[in-house]
Length: 55
Image 1: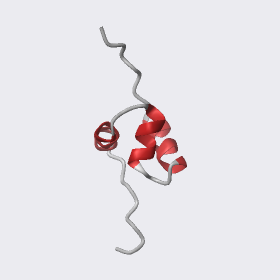
Image 2: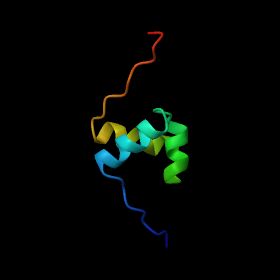
Image 3: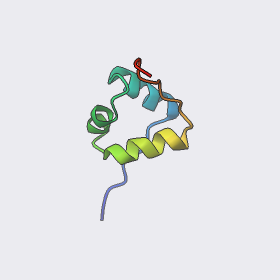
Image 4: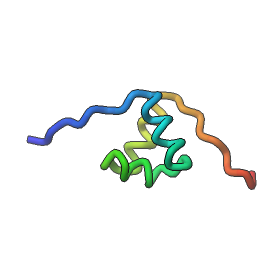
């Protein structure tokens, strides 16, 4: 049976994203999760991600 890992709070996730310069792959590695899971959490918490500077 797989052990359930707790989901970070909204503020914890934002702090991790900021610490990783909003890099989803780096944040996923920090949480030992798939990048897609980070995207799902961002959507679930309705977090607005910063736009790249060149847009």
